[in-house]
Length: 489
Image (cartoon, rainbow, N blue to C red):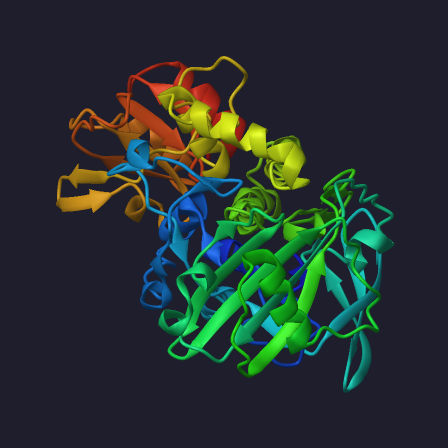
């Protein structure tokens, strides 16, 4: 058995990766520098469509659904999009406090065998051809760990990334925001202080209910750099900021906690340095708009998890792990660009006002609306070669399936985290051809589905279509070898 995978950082990306590895029986150790989980304090409060579906395809949404609330919808720079094209095909965007998602991810990862170590902080590492030796600091002193791989999931100020010498360039207009939980019921706020909005004076404002009697308030202002870490934000600073943005006083109510956020969009020069890999905010960071930031964190984890497992279990083809960077870095660059484009439609107000009017008019064209809808939800991500016909490279709609033993759905057949050969002819699959990969790919037979334009598809464990065609097509064997390695003898 190989040494465990060491994950530095117990946020959404690190915990999701630990969960994915656990589904394959791969041991992982998660080092989290905070001794106790800090509730709330997350700027991102939205799960866009793809983020919600990533959780749903592992059955993780069930444990936190009670903490979700309907979102206002999907927007592009607070210009609201028509979500009708996604109806009955994809999950809607949801509001969810990140702390609830982290607790559920932690619970499920630990259940699968993850060794979670709160209050343990990575301070250094060395690597060689067979693994990584990590130095860890805790209240009990310093010690060393040996791992097969080291994953940097320790946020935008990643120690792992810095020690690996990986550049983290970025550029965008200066911005500074505040996020706080205030003790007032969401329904008691004036209408102008409820929900998300573009502020005509320049900036963004958002508020969502956290629990009865508590509302999370988020502001964003531009041409303002973050002050030094020694300058603590205050409740009066929050009220003044909200009043500038909404042009109405904000109630003088108790503030449970408050922090600043902001800075430029950044994408790491590379996501891998030999046996060290980056996921989530360690690899990319940008303004948390439209749920794209948490979407990328989860996408990184589910993309890397099965590829790393395949490498450690010995069935992965030689180039499989390289596809993590090849697929996820361009997705990060695109998401950062999409976010910066949205921010460019916010400030400076006098310059962007006519452009916003023009974009609003363009959104009346269905093709424009759909393009920005898929861009803002992450549904546009494809790992196929340019020009490939859908559904190749894309995610399948999260629709119902009629299975031999009853009703099912696209997300339900992916709960186990393996590949799926989905035969949509309703007939018998080519079982003998799939048998040599049965430890990596499960066969599911279902009746044809109008929303899936294929007779059969091969789903990768991250939910993207690796192959589509007729069940007995000879090209299937090539796709199986490409993504799941040689057949078992």
